[in-house]
Amino acid sequence: MLKQLYIRNFTLIDELDMEFHSGFSVVTGETGAGKSIILGAINLLLGQRADMKSISAGADKCVVEAHFDLSRYEGMEQFFEENELEPDMSDTIIRRELTASGKSRAFVNDVPVGLTVLKELGDRLIDVHSQHQNLLLGKHDFQLGVVDVIASSQQEQADYRQAYEEWKQAQQALDTLKEQIAQSRQNQDFMQFQHDELTAAKLTDGEQEELEARSDTMEHAEDIKHSLYEADNALSAEGSGIVTQLRTATQALRSIERVYPDAVELAERLNTAYVELKDVAQEIGTKMDNVDFDPAELDSINARLDRLYDLEKKYRVQTVGELIAIRDELESKLSAIEGGDEFLAEKEQEVEQLLAVCREKGSVLTKKRQVGAREIVLSMGQRLVALGMPHARFEVSVTAGEPSASGLDRVAFLFSANTSSALQPVSQVASGGEIARVMLALKAMVSGAVKLPTIIFDEIDTGVSGKIAEQMAQMMAEMGDGGRQVISITHLPQIAAQGSTHYKVYKEETPQGTISHMQMLSLEERIGEIAQMLSGSDVTSAAIENAKQLLRIQK
Image (cartoon, rainbow, N blue to C red):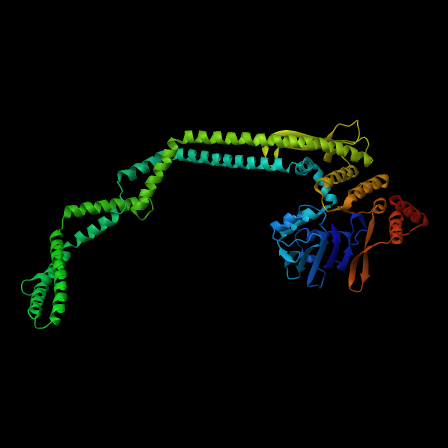
């Protein structure tokens, strides 16, 4: 529950530090006094996007901070663990800071967090129900959500959603496959032509590089043979060749080895060089004999290279290896087209099986929702009687349809204010006051199921008065029993009188401008406030007595 709210430099509030209590509390004040400002500050803590215009004029920063006691609510520790936050169940602190420079920061127990985490935590702490939320009563998602909460169908929803996602993914893959096969069949003749062309080329990886080297060699055959001849002559010419001279030098050193030992190593080194150069000379001679110029062979090589170059240009690639890859890909696509019908049939069968599982899980979810719907009808009948609608009828229609992300069901809340009128969608037939009471009854029922720590009603009493307002207040007070915190912002004295704690919001004119304040009222101050709500600014003694009477009702 909300224990304390601190606000500084937020629109018309210079500074506010207010304690709150469990049970049913009421907030009153004249129109424009600042009740919506306080609610706006709370919404900031719940992750609402910040408007920098909310910062008080002349201030550098505004701060909104709230302290919560979560010690009586189960499951909150898991949230803190999942988001790597240090838990303090007895004093969880949420703070939001806005700066005039445009920065917005959020903290949970002094640890910076993103707005997504803040909003998730806020959804677990406070439910703010304002007048515009009455419009939700006609929305399918809201109605389905209420049914799921009362039905406790979380596990069934999870099972169905997994089956639904698997079916949808398979269906999307099937649709893509059908498009690919259809497109491939349109291009089949062209792909077959390309495949035949590349296959006929008898491509070999590395062939191009080998042919290019062979072509270069033949085109420069005369130069190559001349250079090889000169090298061979320098090495092997009789008498003057290097090899012959090395052999002579080696023999000379060998002849003095007995009398000059150093000649041994030198002779070995020369002999090594002799052997190596003799081998080189022989290889040069062999290569010289193998270098030939064959015009017919050169033409054949160049013709083959021209064919490869033409194919590479046509298919916009640089190498024969890439041409081979294109050929193989075309072969795979053509094979897929030939076996497409069989493969498509397998995938269609797989999708049908997944759809069957989805429907099966959806049927289980539907049965769970139907049980929840019956519970809602029973509970709402009792609550609407307590809210002064003894002849009202409330039904929940659950009809099966096609699979969607939320299930197979179409949920509708049907309503009739009396026994003689036919049941129709509640948003179409209920008056403003009736919708307010229906929403309050739903909130009371849902709050008992989800165990929200704090519920704030922002002028939910629109369109009601008198005895009905008193009955609505009693229902809100019952919601506040057992430690839950219910806060009602109201203009009705019948509701204000039912609160166990009463806060007043008012404006004050100062030399610096208009400032909003909030204070907790004493019993005497409550009498005066409720009397003023009854009679206006001119408080009469009758209004005071009436206020006292209203306050005695709650004692």
